[in-house]
Length: 127
Image (tube, rainbow, N blue to C red):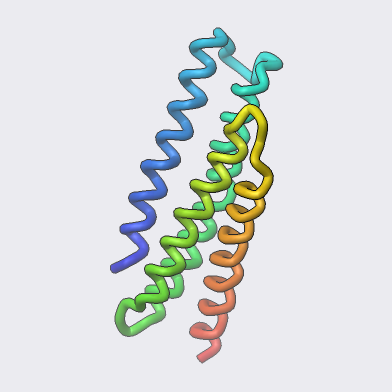
């Protein structure tokens, strides 16, 4: 199976983003919310945005994979694009001065994976 490889890699990124939030919370002594600290707010959003998009993308990828008779190299492409897209987006959102191009490319890759996986799953489901 292919999807579990990317689920594991993305989980490690998710944990890294969560630990950044914990580090900032500890450093700023903020237990709840963002304490009006810009870097903490950015870390929270980078982690939250990741948590909002990645599970759905992985579910769609897994649905495609389960409908195929055998694995497909296209799933590796989708997984790699999702990983790259989420890394770009998390990097951009986490920066004090956000490099917008990284954020845009990250979301473009993420949406491309979501749309491709959804259409591919729909196609396979109709067949």
